[in-house]
Length: 432
Picture (cartoon, rainbow, N blue to C red):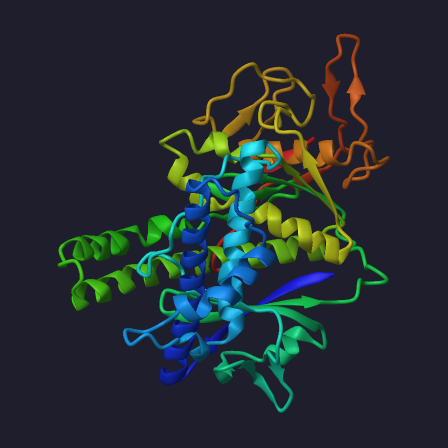
């Protein structure tokens, strides 16, 4: 089983210059290889852009390419892995472009690779061979060839926990260097399934997640909270002269604000998905069409800020670790329009209606909570019992309409809001 472990580095000023030099070497090899491929394509020679072919070309021409003003080669100043990682990125980009043209790649079509600029490209390089990795006598350090021992901001030895390190990718974001280690662990022999029962999760913009048991996770709106500060920083950046040191300083400030927004959003999603995967034995979510949702210009910013795809991605691998079963409901299932009590489906339900009112059985319930209950029932339909002990199999009528199974009659609080401060607030009490 492969796993990624990311840690922040704390390099010295000399080591920062060496890290930047290695990232520049990877960018140089990428651009040089791309120029070679474009020249061969224009000449009609049909170049080979596999990683093996690019490395063979680089080894034969590096003494003529990487030279200073006096004609002396400087490629020996950096590790060979830096140049190899640049060529590896180019080979992957060309392969994706070729597969996209032939229809062998899923998703949007990928264009031909472009040259990387120093100002816009993310500084990045990788180690795959050599004496890189952990330092035995120092749990808060990593060994990087040609750079030396680099101090880390946390105990990396405890996070790796004896796993085998296969690859190390070093990158810089908003002025801070990070090391991402790809480690190989033994597959877990026995998985302990949590005993929390089944739960349905309804994702939204107003509230990030509403669970079928009544728990509501507030959406912090990280981008909206920092938007005023971000606008001021971007306005100051636009007034600086291009190429000046003040513009570089203002640009770094904007990058730090964006990085803080990303870290806050990622921290919440990590804590939420870890709690869900470790608490419940069955989790049901919807297959949301995020690409179609962002086409609505009024909701696009809020939908992107919520990061529904990242939440689902984390749930997929965390449930696999804990043994929790993850059920993905079809995106066309009318979870919001269906009554969780009688199963009747409304023809229309606008986004402005935040309270679901059933005209047949008289059920009045929070809209998101009603959808979460329907998602939970739909996810546990193949099972015999649902989380409340009732029959989870939907009833099929003569007209083909399916009615979600009802739970056992009970009187309980069906709306509990969990705020950022940890306080719970009862939203509504329902009696079946």
